[in-house]
Amino acid sequence: MTGPELRFGVRLTPRGGSDRVDGVGEDGLLRARVAAAPVDDAANRSLVRLLADELGCPPSAIRIVSGGSSRRKTVALEGVGAATVLARWPELGL
Image 1: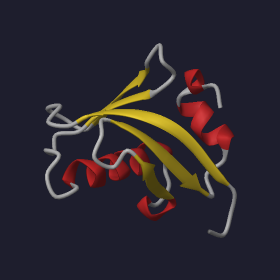
Image 2: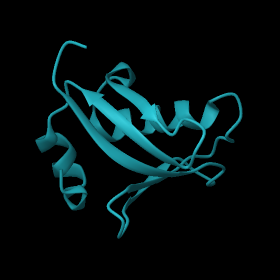
Image 3: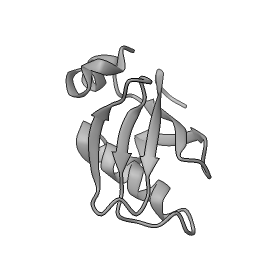
Image 4: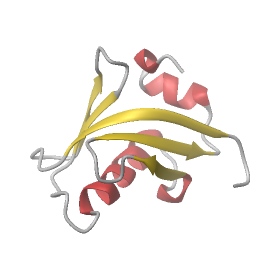
């Protein structure tokens, strides 16, 4: 790791019809859905690409650090500041 790491929770819905972020839920988790099925890590890879597109960073800056086989995940961003994330999703309350 070369820079500061920022972590937040995501509630992922695989087979959600399209790849999109639905905002932040009452539980403080970012709500995301992807079209990919949760098979062979396809949904997780889609989530990483979606978040990278949303935040304007490379996919290599994003890791799923827990919940790889669960709908509830913890995502770590490296080299992406809290201001960037909060500009996109202020409700995350980082």
